[in-house]
Image (spheres, rainbow, N blue to C red):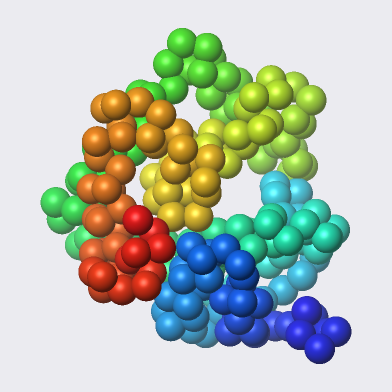
Length: 212
């Protein structure tokens, strides 16, 4: 809210995050404010989570976000980061580049890091997510192990490349999962640099340092 009223401006939404005590969130919000233009902000009930992005619209479910400042900030950043990356990742020309191919490789490495019981949990998560999408409802977390619920966004980042790229930049759980094995940990810096290069994040800038 701005002056007690709901805002339909992405700039005003991001201004609230720029003032955050979380330096990484603040830096990412400053970057997004420069790159997110022409998007409409809407509010209403959502079935698949507290935020949604499609086309030039970002939508938020206030009932799911009420009085949860950390979730509010991460949801705003998540959906608006999608807005900056989706066209790039869908671009057939970009998909031919070595950078995109490296993203695919690292995404596969991320999937491979779910082994043992985590691999079974990921399969269960994907099954429950597909059921929820098919039925047009929220995912039933009662059918998921507590560790999956606690690390929901890390599992969600494994559903497709777009969610993975956004998760790397906006989700602490996804970042921790990336660094959970030696093999993955060695390429964390590389994937971050691929994303930053693709989006024009200047090396040595505040956002560059915050992401690192």
